[in-house]
Image 1 (cartoon, rainbow, N blue to C red):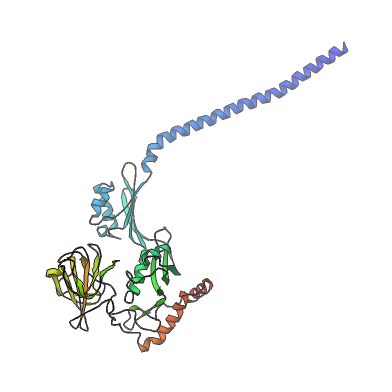
Image 2 (image 1 turned 180 degrees about the horizontal axis):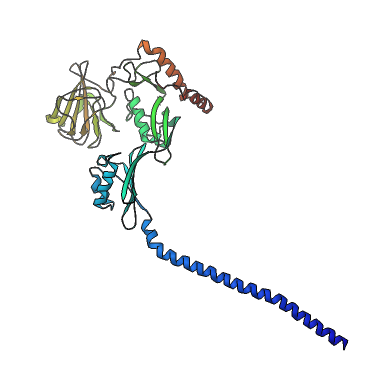
Length: 436
């Protein structure tokens, strides 16, 4: 009987314990269910709000389009072609006018336009030049415009490379722009013809300012302080110095001017010589032997032809078998002739500068194909341009020689300095003037 009583007491205590544990659990379960339901309701509300706002958000997402400015297209036609409404174009042009005239778009420059999916213009960016960007952006119902500098840093660096086939390719192989090859060809263009003289294994070195842009656009080059081109074992060196007239020019380390009265080639771009100067050559059209008192460059039609020196045009027109021809009279009794042109770009009597474009290669007159027949006369006699010693320009004046030597000794050794020496020298010269 005592055992039954004890068992009953134990069962009642167990029931109380179970109830004590079950009631809080039920309360917690109910609260959890309520909490989850509340979260689901809030989530459903956010989803509903997002769905209602989606069209508005989508309408404000910018869609970008970028194009280079084509040649001969005005700003109105260009922007309309990119989907900007004509009225908006006029508003943008007027907004930009206080800081930049969009009528002065340059072919090849980049423009980026941001629009909504509905076609509304949000912003416009136009790269004026490598250092400046025009920004036009919407502000309420109006547009505002400003010019921003493109962030960049300038470093003085040494660039070097080896020629496999051409200077242009060697510069690009060194990770640089073709602009640097053009600069080199201009510096040494009086001593070397970079279309015929380069040999495999030739090397170049330059010490130059290099501007690096934060937006990733290609680097630009500033002052080129010193340069070297080693042609088949013969080194040619140049150092930048302000000449006696205050004009920057390049000189050899001994102070002689690299500039000559004439350039070494009448062509702006590469062309092999197809026929040399000869007192007896078989003419491909007339089928007879006769003198060929010039040099034929086998360039394609339309290649730019340049005057090799300063002078005055004494003839520009059609001249029988020579076809379209330009004849230029220079100082000291020199004259040059440019024949078989497809187009003449100068007029009779005009003054032309060294390197100025005077015509385009063609095949007018007695010619079997497009080429330039170039001839030079000295005091009325035809001369072989390939072997002609070109008259030099003035060297560094004696009164300026001491200043020149300081500049030479600052920059020329850096062409072959090791990395540590180069860095130390640049650090020391960073505040020194580049000229006299």
